[in-house]
Length: 321
Image (cartoon, rainbow, N blue to C red; front, side, top):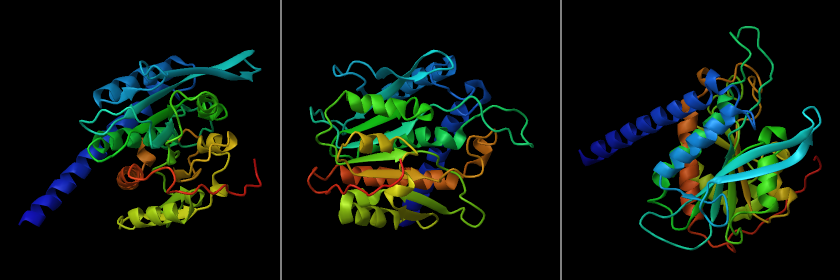
């Protein structure tokens, strides 16, 4: 009887998590957000929303070295069409172990960009041309927030949550942060990046997902990923080389700035709705998103139990940049 009660509780919690994730994706990928483009009023509205969510989750600000603001404003690159620099704002916080105050720096960083694009390919059967970006990258933002709801009681060291801006303009937010980090990265054992999740890769591959780059942490990280994902019976996690993801998302900034930090990139690839008007909530596979939430929560928890010498960084050989 007790096992049945525990199973029922797990199912209820899972359904609750899915409902919360769906609500977040629906907000972020609504027509009202108009693509969440860097510098737009809608992007700034998302920033305010993220800060409110992080505050409610008791995540502490880490956008500046004084730990008083979540906002990490930046300007870099140059938009010749607008004749001005591109400006944006990362939202960054640190989640500490529950009921524990520590001055330690984060051991894990979880990152997902929250910006999207304003102009994209309109599919013939869509009602409008709005680029909602549900999979790219509202779902990833929702997953990081969902994981943060339960992680505090299960981590043994701080975890940084980085919501990058300007990814769609050329990884600008993560690049700016890594040029001048707002906290010390010396204790970070791994960076977990989420970008384009919850899509079905192709017909027949609805239950598959990619984890890219685990070899950058050597055999120990590859084994850890294998062990954690093995408990997921409905989703098959395929480990792929970092080469499949280089240049595609914010983990590339860590490599380009020569931070010897192992990287994990969770993604469903471009998919048939990539940067199109069809990337909306109706295309999201919520069973997959729920599974990814569990996996990154378990991985993050276990990674906080390691010291930064246990994973040996392995620089990948990449021929395309």
